[in-house]
Amino acid sequence: MKKAITAFLFLSFSVCLYAQTLSWDISFLRGRTQESAPISQIIRMQTGETFEFSITPNASAFCYIVFYDSQRKVFVLHNEPLAANAEKIFGPFQLEAPAGTETIYVIMSLQRQANLERLIQAYNNNTSATAQANSLYREVVNLQNSVSRLGEPVSSYIPSGGTTRSAVPRQVTRFSGKDLYVRAISIRH
Image (tube, rainbow, N blue to C red; front, side):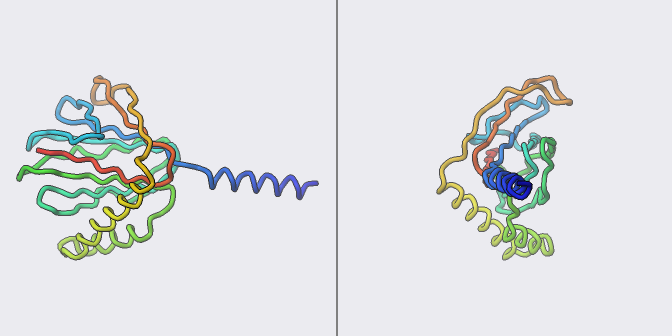
C-alpha cells in the first residue's frame, strides 16, 4: 500500500512538473516621469531619453536579454536565472545617437537554453568579434521564429501600482501559457 501511494505521489508530482507553464510580467517605463509604455507596439522616444523595464516571473526561470542597437551592435544585458516572484529591474538606459531603432530581445524559459548560453559565452569572451555577435543575433532570431510558429504568446495588460521611485500607476504586460518566450521590444528614436 505504501509503495502504491508513493508511486502515485511521484507520478502526480511528475505530471504537474511536466505540465508547468511560465507566467511572467514585464513593465516598460520611459523618461523622467517613468511613464508606462505598451510593449506590443513600437515605443517612440527621443535621443537622450532614458528608460527602464522590470521582469517578474511566477516561477524560477532562465532569463536572457539581448540588446540590438541602431548601429547593429549586440549587447548582452542579462544571462542568469530569475527567482520566482522577485522583480528584477533593468536600467536605467539612455538612448544614444545615432537615431534609429533599438530592439531588446527578452527570452524567458523554464528550461536552460544551452545553445544560446554557449553563444553568449563565446560573445562575452570576445565582444569585438563580429562573427560571435552575428551568431548570437541569429540564434536569438531563430528562437523567436521557432516560438512564433507556435502562435503568439498569450499576453494581457494589467494596471499595476506605482514604483518605489514614482507614484505614477504603470501598466504591466503578463505572458502565460508557454514554457518559452522570445519577446522583442522595439524603441524608435
